[in-house]
Image (cartoon, rainbow over all chains, first blue to last red):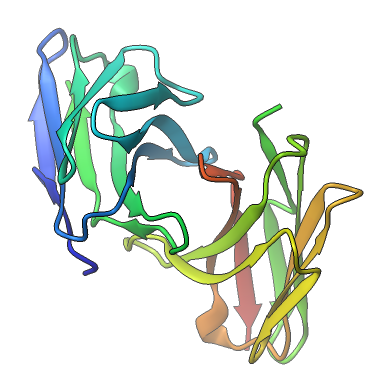
Length: 111
Length: 108
């Protein structure tokens, strides 16, 4: 599984509550990414990181924040979850000259 | 300037025929172009990638071509098989911006 783990794998939460998804890697890869996947929209980049404490916004970053305080962990936080954030979230890791490896995904339902 | 346009959105071919999926981009600084395959309920997995110093790359039945001048790159699958049925995504750059995907159906 290329040393990448997402947690939790499934979560149901209520509108307005904060939610944090975790991506953990054991590969010491530099780049880490968070995507959301919705039918008809493919994989849309939320945020990405190119090193510890170095992050940047993707195309759908509104309502999301990220944290990368150490190489192995990249956290995605929904400060106040909304129903529009119901989605499947994928984390990916990559190094400068390697392919990107994806985690197994987290299915988030906001009710 | 970050988007990647991918076409077609769906593609149906007869087993044994070829399939071609095309992506266009606008960021001329991009130098890395991977293609991913995602089967139903699974994570995306790399099938082939190409860097900007190469115009074409092949791996058995799969090939990718890159035209940096025209800013487009294409995935070619020859002798398609039912197990090639999946969603295919192109992407570009270190930021890994993805296209919207192509649903490929191979009919036997």
